Image 1 (cartoon, one colour):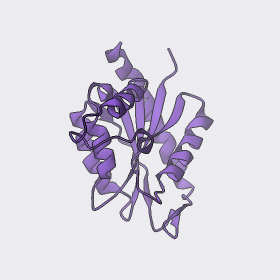
Image 2: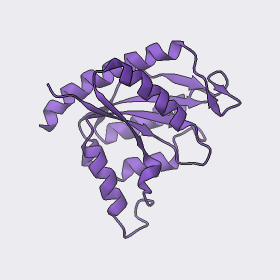
Image 3: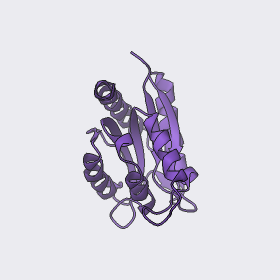
Image 4: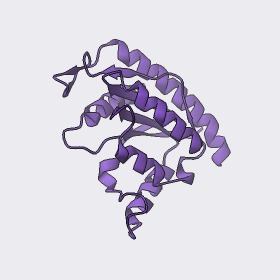
Length: 180
């Protein structure tokens, strides 16, 4: 079987965001496993226009091309106003078939661990034919971040990330057979 390619999607584009810290932490855990190719995919790098507000499709085409190279995803999701960021929603809407028949894990953070954002994301992923896995590491802004900006996760989260990755890889491998 070929090695799976898993994208760790950073779900925020705002100034001062902490998603790159969380994404690098997840990638470090993932890379230590040696069982797939893991890469950070930062939606900020794609400069996606708001869906329907631009005649330029180059950014959306580059985004879709990147997604097409991936077999599964881990979303780094922060909670904004009890939901996910507008930038992540726009990125999800800016592609279609490239999401289909792939698996995703979610690592969320916020005052309530980002649980509400993750639940909103699950509904969107279902519509895009992405199978989200059950294990879901939740990070607290109060206990896993110093001063709300420096990521210092509790040790127990690493086990949850590994359990989530086990599921993402199993499902990504199974769903890849549908895309071949």
